[in-house]
Image 1 (cartoon, rainbow, N blue to C red):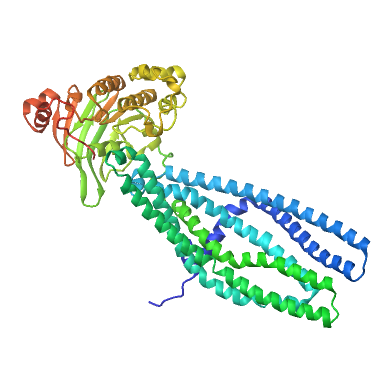
Image 2 (image 1 turned 90 degrees about the vertical axis):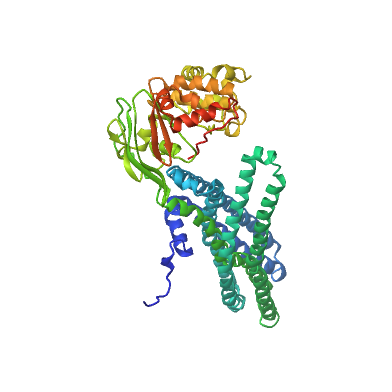
Length: 601
């Protein structure tokens, strides 16, 4: 097969394609404000050029014409021109800042909305710090790219053109001498761009690694302290920071190599202009003002010229961050929106699994043709050893994942054919690891139903056996729970979670090891709250401590993704099978620290 030359369109995130996309998708929206900013930039450039020209006339009035009145008038004109420049500069700077803030906020919203449309599997493969880096650095990079383009065109290019016009008006030959160094400078700068791309990418990923270590250390601070891991975590973050520091130093060396290049070439240009300009004044009759005006314009043109020369380098370093954000935004949603599907209509809330199979990874079956029925208004318990697939059943019921084979039916409706929102809206979930948001107790309960009144929140808390401990706090329901609810005990967090589920008043209840991590006293209180929650609702509960599900209507023993036993507590004990073996094992040790069936599947 013939090897065709690579085109710029082959990479959808190549510099040219990405810049065009950012301009067309995000910049054009604000074209009116950009046009106003460009007009103000043109005014600033024109005022600067005019002031530069007037300075030459002031020199001539002083040294050639000896005209004090002319000097005074031109001095006033200079003040006016510089005032106009200042106002125009202020105007376009504020406008660009407002546009940048709007684009930054919009991209942060877009990324967050995209993340909310992803499946649980999507997040299980990534670290949350990666998204923090994309949300902050990536969104800012997009605004920086657009600002660079606008400033390059509106500020630097217009200023450069204005200064060149003044230079040409004063002396075309001097202008040619000043610009002769541009082509070699551009050729040398192009070689730096490729290196910049790689360094910028490593800088971004290195920053994400620092965030990851920081986040894990703070969120796991109890484990860090308990296992004296302070030095270990310090070494880890020191290594990450050292890598970023070395990379930043490389970036500084590479990206700033243009400075000595430009200064050296500029020095040759200035020297050439001084030689010829001085010769023109001495030998060819040029006026001092003409020479002064030219040199002022030339020196003022060097800064925008250097920024334009560096534009390709600076753009490519920022485009890496923009690419990081857009890669997530552009990726197909792993949890497709299905609000157009029919809503779940419940009559009895009868749940049935029909030959359901599932695997998280190929050739690693978690559920193997599992079938059972959770009868309406009754409690169905799943018990068994770790890794059997119990938690996976709840994940499939909530459609965090889709079954590989078989079907899950609720009141005759396949959950794959109804909208997720309606399914989850009629299901309340309480897990072993309760997540509370960094807000008040009231707010965390109210997440169950946003429209709930104060009386309904209090009623739910009372039913969950939480009202008394809540009122023992000085702030009552306004008590902050802290990050992840760390201001509350495990039993208190669980009861808040039960209150939240009660407030939701969902006809289907899913409980995943809701009392496994609690002491006996807390377990008793939470168990009482759960009994209120499960009344007259279809409940599927994963049991850690078997005595908590002794009164379940149906107990299913799950091993290796299959149901090996089913029945009521007394029936299963009489059979003397796996359930009886588990139960006897727990009965041997009456303490809370006895043998446990930990279910983490």
